[in-house]
Length: 214
Image (cartoon, rainbow, N blue to C red; front, side):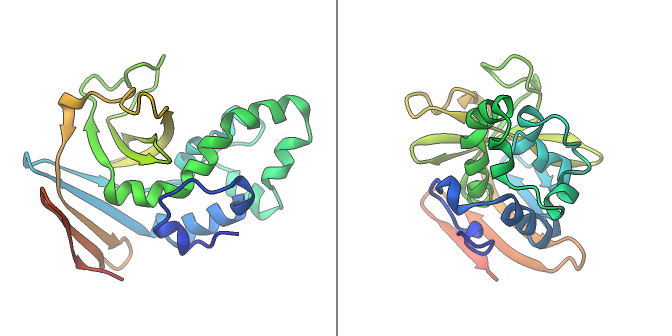
């Protein structure tokens, strides 16, 4: 089983047996929800990203697998014993779970995507080649030759990650417009409560400089 510490650097797709809803919940509560990701772009703009429980619920596609689980009760259900194996008991839920398995495992690489992914702006708010996915930004990161596309939308004064779209290795840029790439010059990761700096990453054309690290 993968640990929440390993999720900080994981850059390959894990096996479904090596993750769990309990692991993801602990990772979110102990790490993701406590951190603010402040992107600075070379054009002078910036983006502040924070995570929310309802966003994780949608990233894991729970609403498509078992819509009887409310987005604001997801973590309580995990505390009550909800496991991935519960999605295999009912045949109809099992079929939907199979379709979303890859998204669930892709979530394990979200932290690496935030640190090393390419950022794209969506001026029309709609993701190309989707029916109605609306986000402001996509962070694209290649995992096992496929594209992990993290959709981020402005909600309640912050940019919140709320979906994962997976593009095939044959067309990793399916959901992005290359012309609207936002070049990151710096990523500052801080503790939300204390404001303490966790990591300050400076990006150049040739390499990444870690100015500080945990």
